[in-house]
Image 1 (cartoon, rainbow, N blue to C red):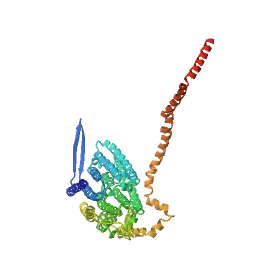
Image 2: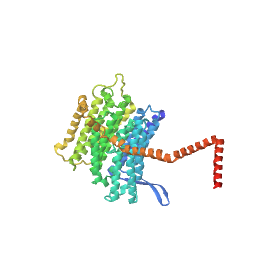
Image 3: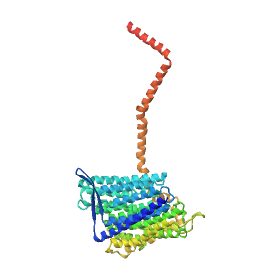
Length: 578
């Protein structure tokens, strides 16, 4: 146990030092507009060289800094959260492997090395999702792994198409080969890969299912690593895909994902799944603004979202830890009087998620919605943007109503405390970043302010939608209103909206039922049927029956001999007479 604790502390220190150094270099590269492209020849054999390429620019360095910061605080937090686990060493090593895979993906300008990091994320995420070894975790892990395999295949096909250019460093060909058929196909394949990794419709089912993993893993996965890999890849490919049909298609899909996740979260009672669906909603927002061609803005929201989402999961983990592993928000209530510090951090994260002015989420979300208001959008996409923003505030208000306010719904002897120092340090670091991170990143990434000219109605629309969302959230959370909404007449509608539009069912059982039933018939009639009758079992039964008959003859030797002799003698006489 001592070694496990020291492993947490050592990992925390090294990752934090790496984060600070990456941030310093990132700011320097950003101010100097400096890019470092490194080529390291691993092996050269008969004129063929295997080269490892690394791209270090302000974007990759600042993102790496954020990933390392969050992972360091998550590992320190895990020292106490996973303290009762005998396999905590294995857990910490898996998390470190996860972070390493993400680093590999971030610094790669080469599709081959991107695939290594991409597959590393998929493999380690599978190991982490099935960490608690039970049937639910195994099912969730398999769904996660198989959903991500679709994107892996798309990336492999993109690598095959890159052979048309004689090299795998996509960064060289984004501008030069734009508009050519191979690059258009590569663009579509990259969009498909990003949709699977960032859980856009129809691949959204795996993201809430991945909540079977331990809470520190959820804090890492849903903030800055696995789910953001697809967005980051599209940010890198955005010069190629800007103003193409692929991005137009992606905009509709991302808008629907954002709306579907916001709607589903309002009918969910599992604390971790509500936060997971909020991640899905924010990923849809990032994809939406990215498909409008504003990649820098999508990158900005990617960074700010990582800060408050990791904090949300950490606070949720602390609550679940104290609730003796209960995740149902209906069992909570009046947590503010029992866990004041944790609830304070949770409230900061919730307000940042809603876009409360001057917190991290405000700087990116408000700018995104104002740029969307200025953009050339149709009414449908415009409506999806603002309705989804209102739904975000709505399910946040509902979560606050159920868990933080009201009367306690716990058993009378339930112990609830705030005394967990390792968790405190992890949450405090991220709370500070959630407060100041948005403004600091805004000054760094946008040194000259954008010119936004909007009429008063559009300018105040974000605030109006948010306030409407707060009111609606409290109304929906009210027991009598909830009962009227969930009456028998509305039951099918509520089930449809609350189950992510039947996506978990459609894309698990719906995809596998026909192939499994056909394969069952094939194996029953073929492998276990005619091939057995005509093959091994049939031959065995035939030989067995013949040997039984021969055995009967052997049991009656004298009679058989005399009968045989008489038959033979009779045939012989007949032959000679003829």
